[in-house]
Length: 144
Ligand SMILES: [Cu+2]
Image 1 (spheres, protein in one colour):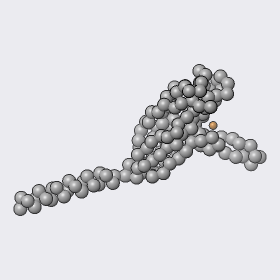
Image 2 (image 1 turned 30 degrees about the vertical axis):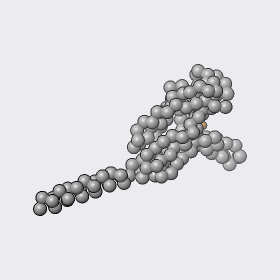
Image 3 (image 1 turned 90 degrees about the vertical axis):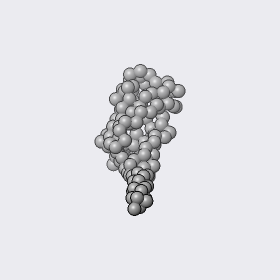
Image 4 (image 1 turned 180 degrees about the vertical axis):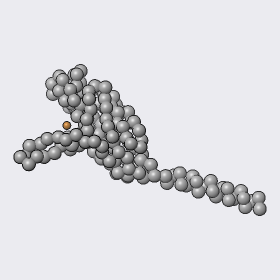
């Protein structure tokens, strides 16, 4: 009888840990992050990156920030007259086992009014705030 109880408890523990491995949570990483310096002092810069989600649940990017300037999430949109424009994004879904990309001509991060000039090779701190994962702090290199 004692043997049976021990076996039952063991089985229960194994089941629990198996569930733990399958638990659906977002598992995020930020790849290929880089920043573009503003063309002139006080102008707008940009930040680009990919967000990978290897987890079994989606997450949402709620906001971004950097000490160098006000950071906004934007979407590039083509207008009917053929010109390009941008619209602010409230939040961006990162689906489970998928990735999203912030890139030139698509979704991107705008650094509004960069006060201190950024040079090629500089690095800037950058924070991404996700609904489930919380804050992810990364360092972004300024490139051409
Ligand atoms: Cu923009």
